[in-house]
Image (cartoon, rainbow, N blue to C red):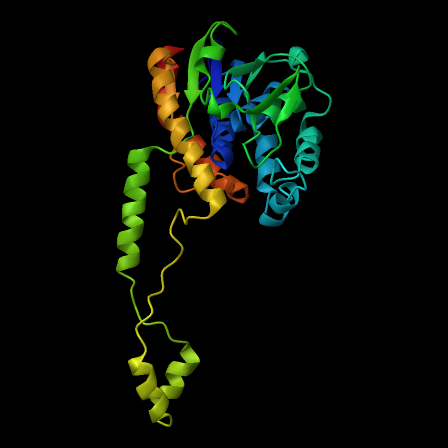
Length: 313
């Protein structure tokens, strides 16, 4: 693979489980020999970016995520007893701390900044010192799901609410090309996917009947039952749509919509040198058990953007 000595400043955005695509981005950069000289991350971007800045390699992260089956995800995201959060903070902290150890931001081998949001003022808060685990927990604290993190007299929540792709934070971290990764759903791609899903399901309308009952009726021994079933309205079997309106799913999708709109405004003011937006629309924000597929999306998007990036370098 080609390589370059000039590094990039990597900006990793928010997006829940979709942000596992950031690992695929890092894996592709590693294969092409593109060094990362600084990282700014928000929410899941702070999680992946913080681990990488602390010295964890992309292959090591892939190994951790591939072990995340549904059962393990459920154990990490245990229901909490707090009135301010649905998910147990101690279980999430234990998982993150098991990966970061006692690392502090100011001591990381790669310069790193995490972004959180002040719950009271709505201002973005740049975390540039202190325990890495605290910064990550503050940056990923999705309102209602995770408890706010108290830091220097402030309640900090998910950084995606104030700066979902923190290109502005990356400025001045290090010299180099700024590469931003946006993992919020692209509305045009999402619209196309849902339209195709609906069309596919409409073509599958059929009467639902258990195989054993259908075989029994074929014998002709149950004429009264046969006549009764003919009078029963046809039931249409449809798989659950991509975004069924559960309370949690609606809340998370609302956050994604707000983040996407905010990103468009922020990128107009502070555009990166290169923007990568993996096609992660088919995944929900909590589908961490689909990590291998999501990582592949990030890898594919970065590989497609690599010719342009190498020209910049």
